[in-house]
Image 1 (cartoon, rainbow, N blue to C red):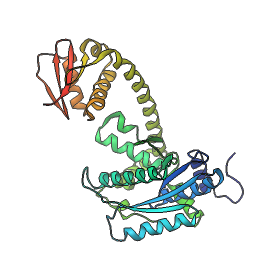
Image 2: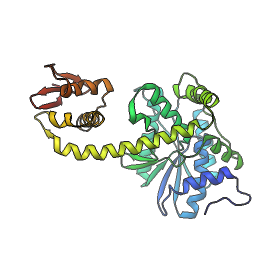
Image 3: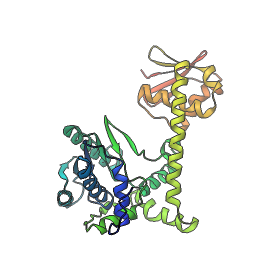
Image 4: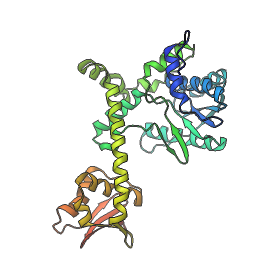
Amino acid sequence: MTDHRPGLDPAVAEVRLAVRGALQSGATVVVGLSGGADSLALAAAAAFEASKLGVRAVAVTVDHGLQDGSADAAAAASRQAEALGLEARVVRVEVGAEGGPEAAARTARYDALRKTAADLGALAVLVGHTLDDQAETVLLGLARGSGGTSLQGMAAASDLDGIALVRPLLGVRRVTTRAACAAQGLTVWDDPHNDDASFARVRVRATVLPVLEAELGPGIAEALARTAAQLREDAEAFDDMIEETIEDIVEHAEAGIAVSVAALAANPAALRHRIIRHVVASEFHESLTRAQTLEVARLVTDWSGQGPIDLPGCRARREGPRVIIEARG
């Protein structure tokens, strides 16, 4: 049964149906609201569905303070949330510089959403990423050559330091969220940063995807989203295999981890490389590039007496029948 009935706009019905599945009766949720079409459509749907399920939904607008008028835009978004029947809050944050402006703003935003959710005892934080956002993420990962992890795109649900981060609209197109806002008479705020071509994501959105659609035919965004879903399934299967394998081939060394050379060599390259990356990530909380991973793998597959390999936060070396990955002194 859906909300598609005479008088209900199809775009509104599609967004509401997507959001309904993300709500748990009687729970508290935080809805991230920027005032843009995606988050505004999300907030409107959350308000409608929450009232039927006994859910407490609180809209939180994060003011990054990065542009003139940001406080006014945040206040306007908050007022629309209240008009929809949601509780609403505005949180002002200080944005650092680490990782560049886009990454720093994202870090500050998610930290504010998480802290507010924790204060409210919320079960989840809902954000308005759409299928178009997923397609852009996959294309950016492909362009950077950052491997299968990036090509998996965004998960429909992930962990935000103990609170669920949920993206109910990952299967919904951006044109649908904008249509849903128009059908409900909601005033959309268009972030000027979304038109700033200095950001790679904006160039993908405004130029790359439209060119692909024009040259290869419609459905590119959906195809990229399907690819992300398939790669995520593959990655989950690999992760299960790695967890089982690591128990048998890894042991603790004095300052790190020792991995059996024979066991690594016996595994296919894809699994061997994932084991190496997994060990470094879990033990030293660092990510390896493909080039770094291949250099560590050469200690197994192409050993000719080479010395230790310096890696982010650690060092790898061959010691007889084992590869030792240890903290750098």
